[in-house]
Amino acid sequence: MDLIESYREDLRFARRPIARVLLGLLLAALLGLPWVAPDHLVFLATLVALYSIGVMGQNILIGYTGQISFAQAAFLAIGAFAFGHLRIGGVPFPLALVGAGTVAAVVGVLVGFPSLRLKGPYLAIATLGFGVAVYQVFVNVELLSGGRTGLAIAKLKPLFGLSAMHTQYYVYLLLLALFTLVTYNLVSSYVGRALVAVRDSDIAAEVNGVNLTRYKLLAFAISSFYTGVHGALYAQVLGHIEPQIFNILESLTLFVAVVIGGIASIEGSILGALFVIAVPKLFSEYRELVPIVYGVAILIVLMFEPLGLYGGWLKTRLYFRNWPFR
Amino acid sequence: MGGLLEVGDLSLNFGGIKALEGVSLSVAEGETLAVIGPNGSGKTSLFNCITGIYRPTSGAIAWQGESLLGSTPDAITRRGIARTFQNLRLFHNLSVLDNLMVGRHLHFAKNLANAMLRLRGEEIRHRRRCEEIVEFLNLEPVRKSRVGDCPYGVQKRVELGRALATEPKLLLLDEPVSGLTQEEKEEFGYWVHEIRGRFGITVLFVEHDLRFASRLASRMAALDHGVKIAEGTPAEVQRHPEVIKAYLGE
Ligand SMILES: Nc1ncnc2c1ncn2[C@@H]1O[C@H](COP(=O)(O)OP(=O)(O)O)[C@@H](O)[C@H]1O
Ligand SMILES: [Mg+2]
Image (tube, rainbow over the protein chains, first blue to last red):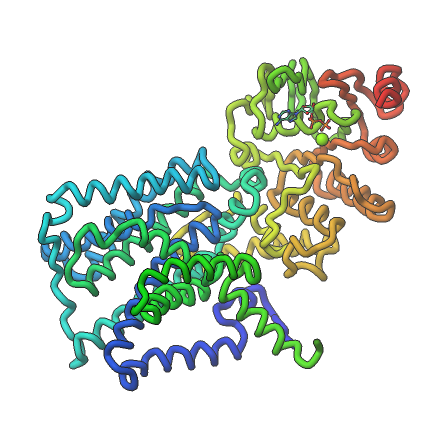
C-alpha cells in the first residue's frame, strides 16, 4: 500500500522507494560504463545522450503540446553553427551551448507563429518549408556555414586525467541528467499542464485562462532550445560541421524517435534516441534499409502500442505489480 | 442597468444562418438565470459569444460596464467568467486533479524558473483549493484517475469543478444535466444551488429539460430560431404562448 501524507510528498521527484533504487542503479551503471565498455560503445552512448536531449525537446512540442513540426533539422543546424562560431570566437563551452540554444529558441518562436493559425498537417507542411529554407540558406551563405571547408570545432579538453572520449561522455551524461531533471520539473508544473491542455482541447484550455499564443510559442521556444543544444553537442562530437549534415532526414529521425519512444514521455524520449542510434548501427551493412525499418516500426507502434516503447514498459510493469491477479 | 452582464442587440450569422438575431439579455448579480429553447435555437451560440469563442456579427456584450468584444477567451476568464460545454471539453489525458489544476492556471504567478527548479510552494496552495472542490463534488475516489477513463457522470462533475476552480463571478453552464440519470440530475441541482448560495456565484445556464430549469432558476429567458421570445419568472415563461408553440413544434 502506498500512503501519501502531504501534498508536498505527493509532488516529490522519484517518490516511490523502488523508483529511487532503480534510478540509483541506472546512474551507477551509466557512470561505470566507460570502465567496462570499449570506446566505440562509449561513443555510441555519448550520441544517445545528446540525441536524447533533442528528442525530449521535440517531444515537448509534438508529444505534450500536440504541434507537429518538421523544422528540427533547421534548429540543429542553427544550434550547431551558432555554437561553432561562438567557440571559434573563443567563447567557453558552457556559454557557447547556452548561446546556441538561445539563438535556436528565438528562431523557434518565429517558426511558431504559423502554429497560431495552422493545425496538424498544415502546420507540418509550413514547418517543413521553413526547414528546407534554412537548409538552403546555410548551403548558400558561406559567411554562416564556413564555405566549402565548413567549420572546425576544437575538441573538449580532457578533465581529471580522463581520456578525451571519457571526458566527453561524462560531460554529455551530466547534461542529459540536467535536461532530464528540468524537463521532469517543467512537465509536472503549471507549464506542462497548460501544454497538455492545449493539446487535448485548445478551446477548453483558452476558456480556462491558458493563453494559447503564449503557450504555443513557449513550446516552440523550449523545444527549439533543446534542439539547438542537441545541434551544438553534435557539432562538438563531430569536430567539423557542414550544412549537408543537417538535411531533412534529421527532422524525420527525431520525429521517429518521439513516436517510437513514446509520445509525451521523458523516459520514452531516451528510449527513442537509443532506437534511432542503434538501428543504423545494426543495419550498417544495409543502410538503405534504415528508413524501411523506421517506417515498419512506426506502423507497429501505431497499431499495437500507441504509447511507444515506454508504454510497453508501463504495461509490463503493471502486469508484474498486479501479479498474480491476472 | 446595474446588471453584471449586459448583452445588447446581439446578432450572429453563419453565412445564411442567423444563429442569433437581436438578442438582449441582462444578468443581475446573484441570480440564477436559465436560457431555454429548442435545439438549434442559438443557446450555445450565445454562450460562445459571451466567452469570446465566437465573434458576434453585431451588438454589444458588457461585463461590469466594460465591453468584452474583441477579448480572447482566456482574458474573459481572467475577468471572472467561467463555463462548461454542452459536449464536454476535458483534458482527457490528465487526471481529475490536474484538470482542476488547469482551472487554477490563471491564479498562478507563473514563474518559469520555479517550475524548472521544482519549487512547489505555489502548487501546493492551489492543490489545497482543488481538494476543496474535489470534496464538494465527491470526486475523492477518482482524483488521480485519467479523466478519459471516467464515466460520463464523473466527467460532467470534473468540468463543473474545473470551471469552479477558476473562481468565477459568473458561471455559464451549457446543458449541465443532459445525459445524466435522474439521480445524477438531483445531485447536480443541489450543487448548482450551493454554488449560488454558498459561493455567491451568479449562474447562467442553458437547459433543455424545462422541469429542471424551472426548479433551479430565479428567472428564465427563452430563445427560438435565434430570437428571444420570452423572459420572466419560470412560470410566466413556460406559460408564454410562443414558448409553448416552439416546444410543441419541435
Ligand atoms: N460554428 C458554426 N458554424 C455554422 N453554424 C453554426 C455554428 N454554430 C452554430 N451554428 C448554427 O447556429 C444555430 C444555433 O446553434 P446552437 O447555438 O448550437 O443552438 P442550441 O445550443 O440552442 O441547440 C444552429 O442552426 C446551428 O446549426
Ligand atoms: Mg447547444
